[in-house]
Image (cartoon, rainbow, N blue to C red; front, side, top):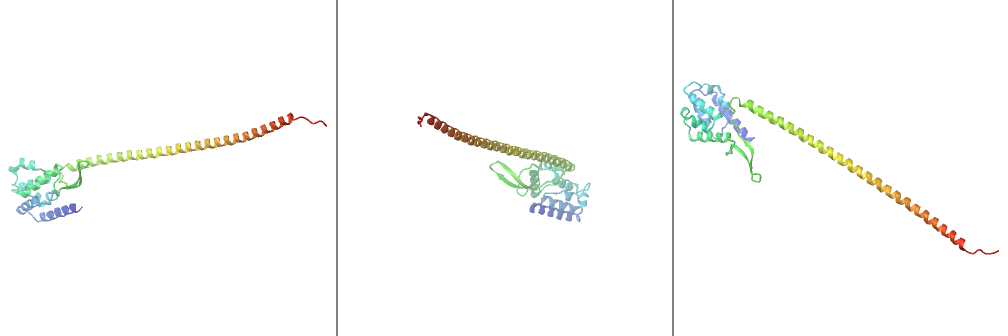
Length: 225
């Protein structure tokens, strides 16, 4: 947030200066802005009335140069160098940095992030955005809208997966309960059967003893009276 705030403050400073700059002073302001090492946004300056007044004048090339710094690249400058002011070393460096931003590559102070060697990728934590060309905003809004729609669909899919997982978990819980209940019923049934068999064995044992006693009694000789 600190980098973004500094950028916004710097843009505001140049916009305020542009409010009192006309003609040659506006040209000098453009030169200063396009060579400033920390300024990378120029749309607000382009929208300043006194800067826009340069169109169609002897200083219109400076306005074209500012527009190039807002939307163009180093190749654009090389292809149209004969119609634009000569760049000083600071301006050349700035335009090349802006070109790097357009190519989404890294440069000190423009893109900040962390190199993940394990995954072999660069995680971007901050990137200074370039100015939008006329008509780019609608396309950007459409891209973001599509991304939002895809995110919503993904969220719904994840929620459905969670519900399915919860449902399966509940089914597993119920199945486990049924198995445990059946196991308990079987255990009680076996126990009851064993107890019943134990009682029958006692009855059979007592009945057998009684029959042995009767047989023994019958086999004894009877005394005569």
